Length: 119
Image (cartoon, rainbow, N blue to C red; front, side, top):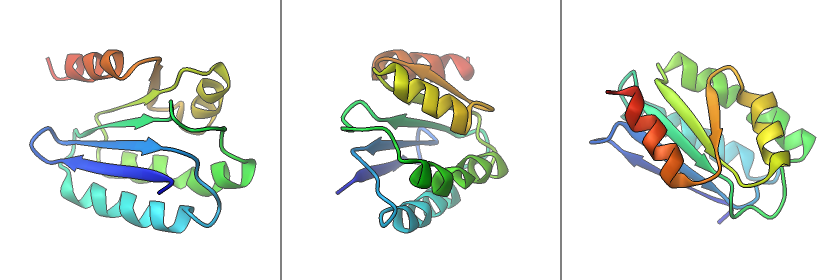
């Protein structure tokens, strides 16, 4: 599986772990993403963890995934964090989703940031 996507309704959060998406994976990913959005309430938070991905996204995959940012905004995203331990990933995520996403090198730091948004 190139990714996992878990929705925690009680926490109003979606957690994505990406292991290496290809162009053929994107339609299923977007479908899963849209289904996840329908389970969450406005103000939800999200985490995308790419620490186990072997490589950054190809330009084609990045372009195909770009609309997910708008989908999240349309559903009332309250905060989104990317967990990446590579400067290249950080640069790519900022380019794709910089309008609402921030970056942390560990999940623990990302989770602490998201918790601070609701305090």
